[in-house]
Length: 145
Image (cartoon, rainbow, N blue to C red):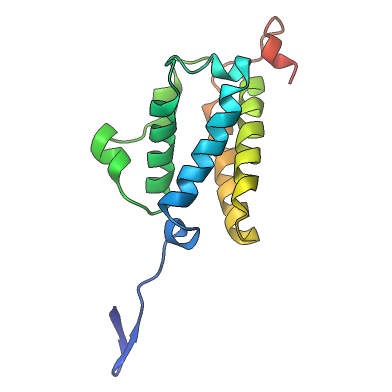
């Protein structure tokens, strides 16, 4: 609590992370998203690990930190450097759209308040667009999204 005036206290401001339900919400988001990834052979090919759990944990920890939760991601992995971390993978506009399709379905499962849903979705769209690092390849079957 912090003083707000003569004998009046107001609670500290909350974070988006707290407002949407904290860790259980971000776990539900990443679980639903990676269920979609697991069933999408073209997108799944971008994930080199046979087990998607490590990728799921990294995304969850990153999103929790970004939205005001624990800083575990940075403690374990350092600065996020999203573009650098995604540089080894060919991310085309078609792959971005596949990623967004599964993320949209995952966000919809959360049933967030409209303002929270819009804030989250706006960020996810911007982040997905920023990860594109290759043009479409007409020989790529993923281009037919």
